[in-house]
Image (cartoon, rainbow over all chains, first blue to last red; front, top):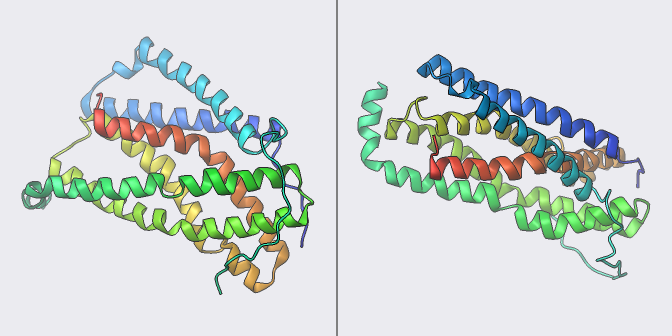
Length: 95
Length: 174
């Protein structure tokens, strides 16, 4: 069995959370504002309230994404709610 | 031509919507239990005990089953993409419907690239069963790592934006 170290670590997940949040915000907020302005002439998305709401949501999302990735990849905690039990099993596999 | 299509499809709007929502539900939920209650516990055990050969065996079995189970999701997604434009035409929707514009930005800009990569990981070059049959242990391990990293990174946007798409489609807030 080939052994290689999995690259997931807190620093990587922090960078991923940061950049994916920025990219999503630019794509979704920017794209939506552009289409609404170009198609309907609406500029409401450029007002301060929607912008502040969008930025606050992005900040919340960035933190949420980082913490979720860390928890999912077992970077938080030690799995004390689980125990490993040795079993002898037969597993069905595709031919 | 669009006007003709709209006239033809408009009486069937509710039926097209049923088909669309049927496949949306499969696409959103079909892998959730397998992921949360089978894949995640085993992969967490592996991350905490990376050298344990028995956990690695279990990990490999679970990810291969997950690859196979993604079939439901990956049949549903193209059906969602097919029926979506039909709904757009049949319903006479336009970019004046803000909820639809944002929904399409999410589906085309976020979900579509994720799914394209997911197809590769589950069924094509990244399919773990095929790599194991080929006897390429290095490639197999690389593929498992790539798939786990993909699942870790895409879980947050899938959860939040999947819910957002439902809210936009049902509530139509703007």
